[in-house]
Length: 180
Length: 261
Image (tube, rainbow over all chains, first blue to last red; front, top):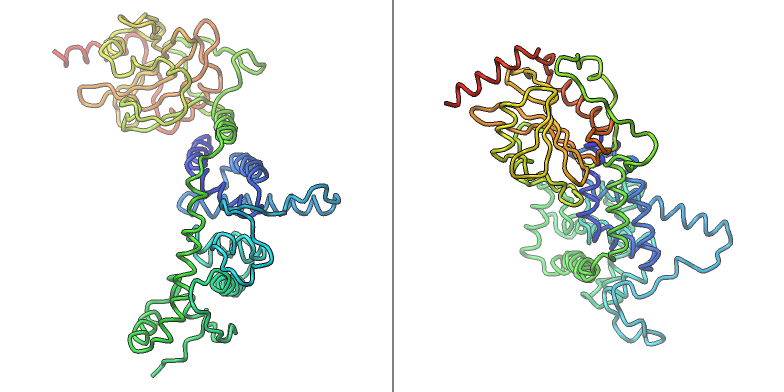
């Protein structure tokens, strides 16, 4: 019983840097992210019994944190936003001085990630950065695995184009041929 | 030939290691002779690597100490008893050697303890516990010759100051576990008022600590009730026998002494 709490507590402490990174990329602000991480830890400790040993701890806590974030965004929206907490800036220490030349100048990958639509950015974070499987990412976000793939596909095309990672082939983005 | 039949989705799954091995092998084979296919796969592999690399600096950022402390505190609060002066702490009366433990062993476990170490390896002895232990709690006596000596000689219900330390050793009970090993339940008080509630069992020629709870004790050296509840759960788990009567205990201890010589 208290062993579960102890176990989750230890994992949380060890995982703080990753958790914080995920939070920052979700909400785009370090201050908001730190509050979010704290709330997520609180929630995780309170429901430590529900973590099943043998399953991925990172997926579990990401899901908790993401759900809190979504609640928070919803609450802000319904409360009539005072200051826009979803406004993102300077995620990975980029300079932020990119304006009209955006089309001409290649962006850093970090900037390009920052500018992805929320739902694409988080799937990139979960799959490419945190190395969750499609299935695990789908569980964290509560969406079908096919949706994970289509978002991931779009996100990567945008990244490739924006940051000039490689020649985008311009091929069809159609998802047909999907055989799960 | 299957070439050109690969959809972008298949290639992305290939890059992400999400394809079954059969299909992955097909893609690999096709890539050997198809540069365009290689380029398409490269898009997915490179974006994955680039994204990971781009987010790496965030991981290197030190976690703000405020956040770290807040979480640490939370973990502590969840795993340790409420403050000594707080309501709800009832000093557990000192137990006599021959008092029956059975009924108490079924008590529910309180989730609030400073540190719980239970296991048969006695690893806590070697100081590998990672739980935050405030002020060191003076558990140095664990594993010391003075403690070994006390475990082998102090009768249940008696208290002794361990030579060479400021710790008081209190033997609570002696019993046998489900493997018939001789075990002793005891408490160690330190000057900082922390109390270690512990069980040590005989393993070969040495005492091995199999359970320890560190809890801030009340003045007068009684462990808070919550720690004894956890102990009770542990004793139930190892199927501990009823405490030995004073005479039985004396006999068991003297047998130990005899075996030692």
